[in-house]
Image (cartoon, rainbow, N blue to C red; front, top):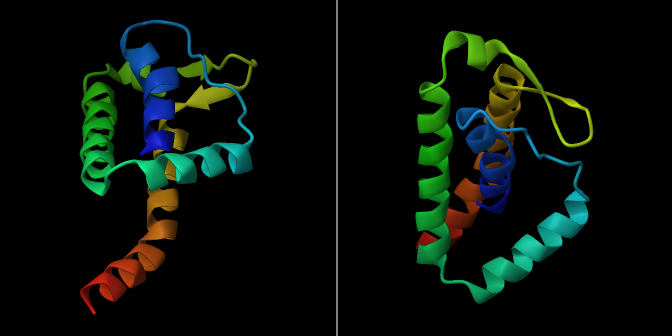
Length: 111
């Protein structure tokens, strides 16, 4: 959820509002460590609701873009290219990458 929020707030929402993309390279391990801490102190239902909210925001904002906006290349805060079709490809791969561990986790909860 926190990664979705980050990409939404720093890229997708900015593009939809015709603002400058503010993504920066993140220390993934540090970000994930903080996400774990957040998860440990936050109700699961709140995390799930926010995850759903940010996914909907991402999808709705992208759907609202023109073809030109969708296929334009944007520069992030560090001058790196942000390209929505590549972001979506990576987004889908990342979700699929986590599906099996998630399925195992949920199966253990039901057992």
